[in-house]
Length: 188
Image (cartoon, rainbow, N blue to C red):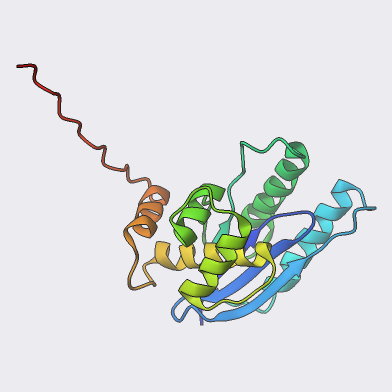
């Protein structure tokens, strides 16, 4: 059995989903909560350790998906940057899986799940349930699940993609979106 790991990083609730690559079945899920009284470094170390424990039983990992940085968010940007880079460092140098990491942006995650880059957390949870039947009351797990589905689509394991979902996958693969050609109006 092969799997996709998706991570929605957050100090208040890092969402982890382990999804069967072929069937899309959730193999495991976890919400990592850290105590606000701990230092940033302690909280990050706890999250890394729990990711390590979460993936320990996995023998084959096809892909890791981590939400890209939200460059438009100023709230605690330095701390989120540290968490995000520390998880990426763990993937690159510490875990034993030799697989690709993709980083869909927050807007790509929203678009893949809802066809709206401005979708709120509640709409994402609703659409994730409607599209894939994944029921949760936690937006971090919902986002992680949507990212796992992005991973399946990226690997070609999902059958039917909508046009907006294909656009997200093409963007992640580096394919440029075709520009709309505007015709010039000819003056009489």
